[in-house]
Length: 243
Figure 1 (cartoon, rainbow, N blue to C red):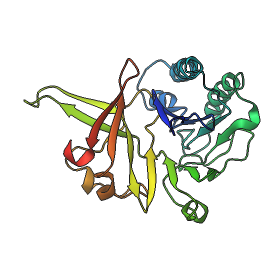
Figure 2: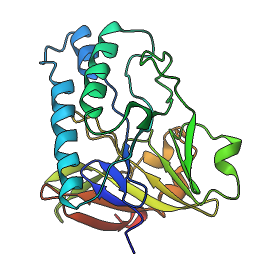
Figure 3: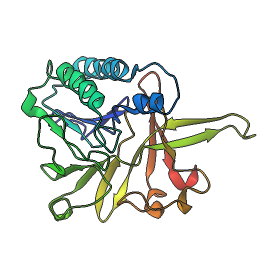
Figure 4: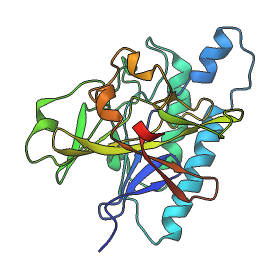
């Protein structure tokens, strides 16, 4: 029996269905930094494509097939319209079309996706055999149907902060969160954006932040945190509350 899902780099893959899930891209983030005066090279698109190629290569190495690619929302960064984001994302789509038919690319609408510049009709959710894929900033009646057993969401940009016993060396790592909420298994996917690690769910003060997701902070504490290391090994750090 095949694994239900596997973590590959910053993505989740469902071997049985051939579904590759990609979290928040925030295409145009580096461009927004340059607009604000931070002079960094705009390598985000090329880095994203390189990273996706490595992930696809690993899927092929495992003799799995990709049939569908689901973007979990916040594909773009600017809340308003920015023409460069369209150029950047179309370049990513052109790359992915080498591996999946255009009809197999599903774009979920996130809170940043005020404009659908892709030429596609963005969806609020995508459902496959009891698995609901959506952004996570709000819920929908369809994803709360009793037939839905698994939620796969993004939006939170989860990470964990790890430190040594002396609390001298501290490092933040993107992580996947897996737990139960409302009698469903929930998988929270980290952002695909490489330039920042995200929000540390185990740091003091996180629970005092304004609720940002349909999954409450208190529920997050009971989720397990998983980190994929540089060699592709999945590390289980246990419950968030114990970190």
